[in-house]
Image (cartoon, rainbow, N blue to C red; front, side):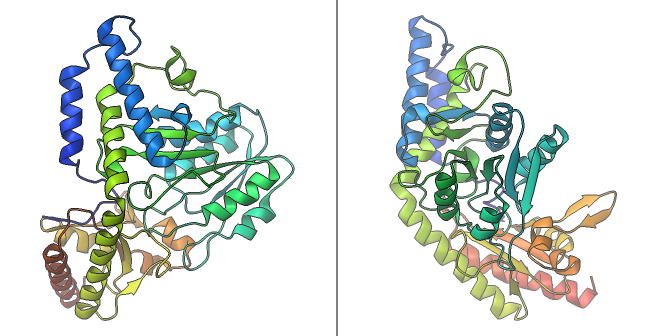
Length: 377
């Protein structure tokens, strides 16, 4: 199989898996224990925390380890809300469900939320967000890169506006960290979510960057782990994997960006040669270097995915409920019709893909499109 679904998850880098297995063998102690084995496990966690912070350009004391992106996003939003008790939040209509549905939950608790629109390219308006600010606005949450289209949001500009207004700003960077240059050094971001398995680390571990002085209350209650914000015995080996993934990304990020960008463009050009009426969804250049979301008119994306399932791993944004296909709300928010959205697929390349694989995948996809069109599917 040619794997073109790196935005869903990436394979674990061999250097990462080696580090994880070494930790599983070595770090037998509970990091909260005072004996030598516990102290060594604690040291392992703190070394990984420094690796994450070094990659992001922040202080190690500002990194809180979580079970992944969903927990980190929930901690950022609900933790901020609980620390205030009431007020107004601003987000966008294209957020990941772990942000969007969390905001819906907060509405049920009495908080007010504004969902700002995006343009045809899938980009939120900085001015639109600024206009939505109210006296009681305490948090803005906007993703860095959209998981379906790869479109990059103007988070640095939004951060600057929010800083001037004294409003906390959260960025869900699950899709961008490790795929492109990301640094907190010069950005006025207060909270940022990162996820290990999106950039060649293990599943089940992530982190929330929390700028010093940010107001958060915990979602879980127990011991005093992670400064009391995330109780529970730490996933030491997973944390080691996240730290190692950050270390590798810092070393290889420029090569990773240039390689995936080249493959993405090769894939699009190869597909256009075989399917001339293919259409790009999202901004032409302002997107992740690895992500290609395209509409193939007249072809149902779920049927294409089924036909390709043994040969090429792709993703569709459609959801299936009781046999009914629901088009991607992201694509609908960008102005696509239901039919256009249901004919769209996401292709996301990775650092280990090759040019031969990309050409081979384009050939297989092109043949599948031709077969589906001939069959009238």
